[in-house]
Length: 397
Image (tube, rainbow, N blue to C red):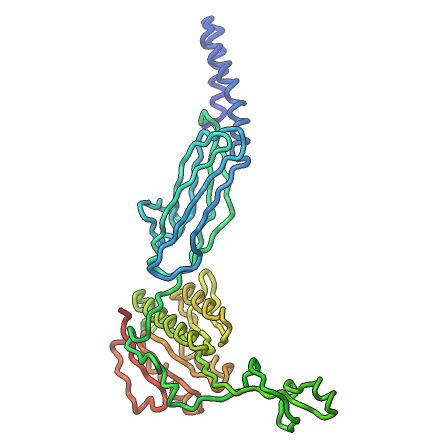
């Protein structure tokens, strides 16, 4: 690399050349003084019109699937690049087939390294296959690009700010694989199901009654007939599930985390959410975990929107093991904000007395609850949990 010693060295060669009357030393010094400004100018424009791009075949996949990744660096100018080095930040949890990632000082992050030499208006491309073996909300990039002059005297660096997002959803399996009844996992068919008017299915109009909601008044029909008229809708049965996901895998948060058990709990939640969405249930999700790089816990209110399942799966892909609050505290605070007819479904890998006490209290005031446990060390007491649908799930196949 260039520093002021090069100029001192050139001046020394000129002085010695004059002293000993050596034309070779003088020519060598002159050549060095000529190369230095050329190399400096070359370095100044080396990264001009250089671009770096990533391409993903899919941006949302499930655990076990693969994604094709292509990266490309382009030199869109006539001046060649004698060398270019690219250090692209890459999640360590995404292994690349036939490529070893370089270590990084950033936790859970590695570097995808590339080196190339490009002539004018040339580009280089590398293709990889990612094995998505672990759920997550992954960010690819930014990339640090270095280049310089042909002689290696100067070096220039540019940080490409563009990042790409890859979401790996948790594994979704049939409820039979969890040992749950495939037709009625929560005992809903035996319970009283609320019947509502479906505003998406209008049937006609009728005269207004004092107990009718003002929002159902048909104003045009009222104007025509001279008397208040209201819209009539076909009835529908509404199932509403709110999944409470407990990310704690030990009775006390300070005891640590069991990653394998946590992944099973999240996979179970994804499987139940998928089951409900297929049957047009209104599904919600509340967890005592957080979004990545945030202290905000996950909360998605129930909905039957076609895109709602995607939002739930994205939240489950992103959820971390950091426990914001005990699940029984979260259940107590959030239950008052949920529809009275909703079924509150507790999904947990560890069952505690505090959790059961809160569920019994809510059942006594009339809430509908279900408990699906992956805790192999807990045996349910049906008498103490009367009125609560209890299921012991097992690991998926």
